[in-house]
Image 1 (cartoon, helix red, strand yellow):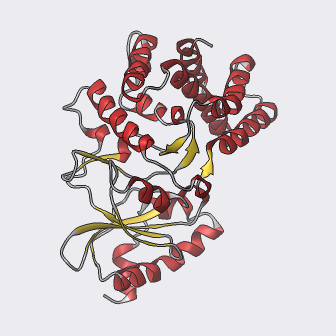
Image 2 (cartoon, one colour):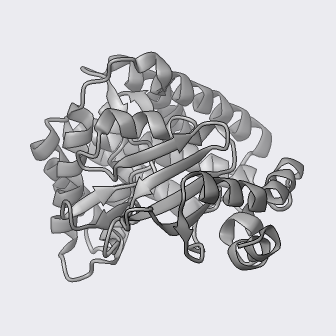
Length: 315
């Protein structure tokens, strides 16, 4: 396959990554280099490549076949801080609950990964009740958190990341004046600073575990993909699963649903359910201010949901 054919077939303008970073100067430069990167990696690893998958806002991802016929996935990431620890995290987990890492090219920011087949996401597995899917996720998280980390210095500290977020929340609240409850926002800021420093243990957290990042597979029933790893309080991880497996706030009694879900995670992982709810409160407050900072109208519904989470946490 010649490079022009790679450009036409494998980097169509409809890819999410083209749309999401094409307006950035550094994004355009990376996209211009992408066809050459694909060709170099294809030839260097002797891969047969299929058409890329359309998802992925910061990476190019396509099915691949190894020289021995094994199915794989080629992932080439646009360089940005959140993706830098992915290969190291997959090495820590060694395929126990995650896809296996076959090869890593740090210069080209490329990963050659095990392909999860059939690859149905946990979020799309509607035949399983919501709480059964959460149980699947909780067991996977427990395994990931249990992995020994020989060199935590290779990962961002969660406490540093959330302290920075706390400062941004304060700045955005003062500058944008979105009309949010100042007491609730103050709770969120305090939690972002305090929760990481009061954790009873530190683990390698996935950082972005949600129902779309857990795939049905054959080697194990479910495998986790796409970590954005940090080292710190495990209580950070569960919120997106609790929120996205189905919307707890559409149930008649959201607080009761949330209590059951946080309790389920507590039973499986040994984490305090109230602490998990406190992390969810902090993350919902931070996300609400981030949303406004992107030029969107304030979401008072989101802040009302943060208030429910705070009540579940006993704040």
